[in-house]
Image 1 (tube, one colour):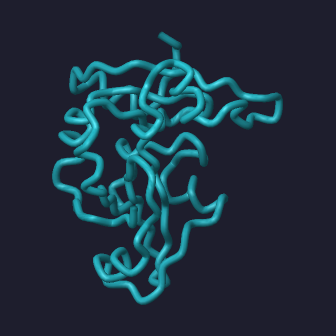
Image 2: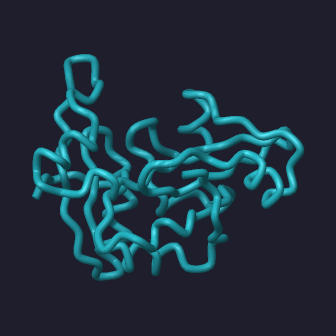
Length: 163
């Protein structure tokens, strides 16, 4: 296993949750050489099992992270209604670290600041195994879907994407 350290790994280890670190090769300018889905396909893993952590910013200034697996796009109307916000947009590149503590490309749906609201799309329940951001650019973490859902217990779960 790669020797990386992050709050995500600390959390998983503290809860005795089994996981695997997946290295994502980076180019010289720290961009992934392959997208994670292509890398997983090459390893024989389900490319739709990637849990994307999408950060939104409301007009109120509050940030929300949506954890979603598989295809589909955020249902903006549903998100605005659920969050009781008139306007909502995706967070800018430089706002993501401010809101989450992690850089774009490494944001996990767990081990986040308490001030960040987290939503989980119900589609996550369709996966036995999932892949999440590790908190460290160039690495992802594979774990059981039920373990991730247990860590996300207490956050709002709903149908937040259009397939």
